[in-house]
Image (tube, rainbow over all chains, first blue to last red; front, side, top):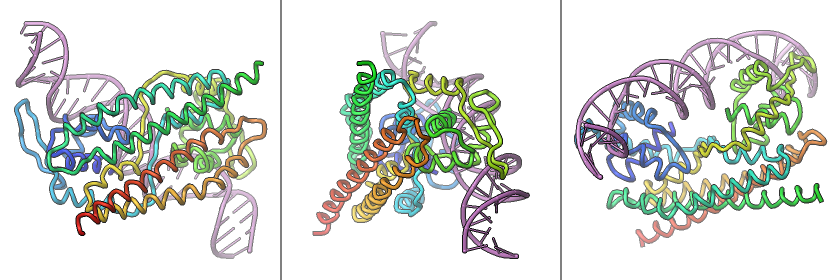
Length: 180
Length: 180
DNA sequence: CAGATCATGTAAATTGTTACATGATTCT
DNA sequence: AGAATCATGTAACAATTTACATGATCTG
């Protein structure tokens, strides 16, 4: 369901697109929050054509197919976004790594956390460019998609970096304490 | 892979346990970061017995089976935790909802964000109890599992709540502006 | 023309969810 | 005794990943 919604949302924000381009857009926007490979996107688009959430036209040679979200598709987005369902699927491999870090010797654990910190710093450095990319891809007239979403991405990455740094610091203290 | 690692990590932190108890522990600790149902846990445990990452014994009647992590299992954890692999799988339905919110009329969108804020506030209220539960389930002598992990959970939830509140506020301004 | 990129798909395997099924023990 | 909880599993289905496969167009 979530992939379907993410695709519909992306089409609604950035305008009609091909499966190929949707895969690109995923990398450049939703990607901090949800991922999908083309091999999952193509079948899902075909399915959405069958259920009337999107329409297809041939577009721009090379066998390119352009998908457009329908009113029915927009309704689906609204229903999902406003719907109750209390369950929120969460999966976070970075955080899982954080869960395991105490099982390592403190020195090693600290190194892992420092590496994690560096990774987040790198992501932060790339965010301004990401923001430009997203704005460049946004269809004129559509609401500024990036703003809330990118803001969330920014806050998330910042938080993870700080957590990694604080954790590393704590572990380094332990490591120092045990070999005085 | 990640489920396997999460299970091994949980066994290493909290000591030997049955599949049933592991399912419980997941709900009470890793759950902010990774989820699993018993129908996935049981087969995975059986598989790990075959590959020697854990051992089984019968324990405490009622057909209960107790799993213990082996040295080889611990090695697996270390390798995974320190391994390179730059890819980090992330899935976050709350955040996905945030992505879509701009597609709704501002008033409705603001309401969705306020609801989200309330949800996070509720989770925050439950965290002290969660911390107690985790500590109660932690085997004596093992490292304080909860500390870094719960800290991350706390920071994540706090960040999401603030983001939801700020977004709601912004949307409310828009809603007011358009119907002056 | 060769290599990069655009573009779409399918197949096989793995992972995850929902539903079904069963039985033991404890608590009231 | 009946309800709740402990406890384990399987089956069917859905979602996801990895690998395989193919061809068009553009760029140097």
